[in-house]
Length: 336
Image (cartoon, rainbow, N blue to C red; front, side):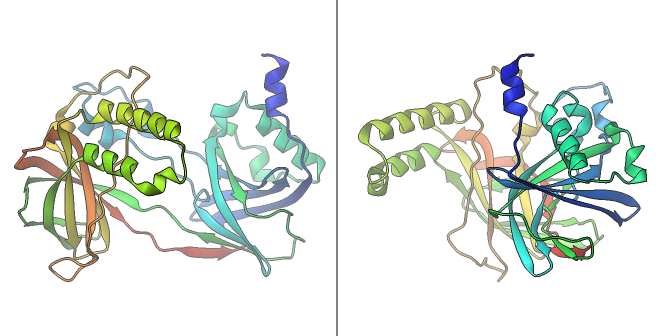
């Protein structure tokens, strides 16, 4: 501990707004503490926190990628993905946010300062929250697009718009994908309904070719100097080489579904592979495969997925699994 750390943690608010409203929904309680304004505006919400059962389990067996994918659970946040807060007729848009369990921030003095300053500004901790252990809570901080805090009184309604992330569901449906060939497969979704997936096309994605085309684009010369272009290209090549060596490619899958779902395919080779210790220098690249057309051969929306297992450029087929489908969740709002 030294004073430089305290300087980093210290915040001086230009404005502070106490809201102090508890929200009850589906047997759980949430507390909207208030807002602060310094360089940015933020709104703070306390949520219940439940630790994943997999954290303390020590299961035997091979720890391969399939097992990790099946055991990994994304943290559940109810307010992290809110898109708008309306104070009466004044609408404030969010620009992202963070969420973390308080038990992992017991040495984060920013949290203590926030709570102390809210108390000094008039925040009344409700009885149910006063006796709740910090291990059972998580703090969500949302950045708000505004240069001043809203006018607020306790009788003013606040309407919160939720835009939740899609919900992943594991399928593990084996499929052999052949380059230039079509195929169809079905699975049963979480509503016990049969969904058909029609694979329109399977193609090779040459990331090295894409990289060359990117840096040969004349538009990049308008943004960067020749030296900056070379440096950027070198970094990109080094990162790509860690994931997909020269001469290797990825596989792109274009598909359409009888339901509005997003699919993720993995290669059988990747799912069977063991977890490798990290060297600390690996850089993971996300590859997006977007079809050239909007509609597939069955008249349904055409979507794309990249199987990010390097394969030789002359690969004719790949054993894979339709591992996940993502259920789209509709936007909704609540007024408190």
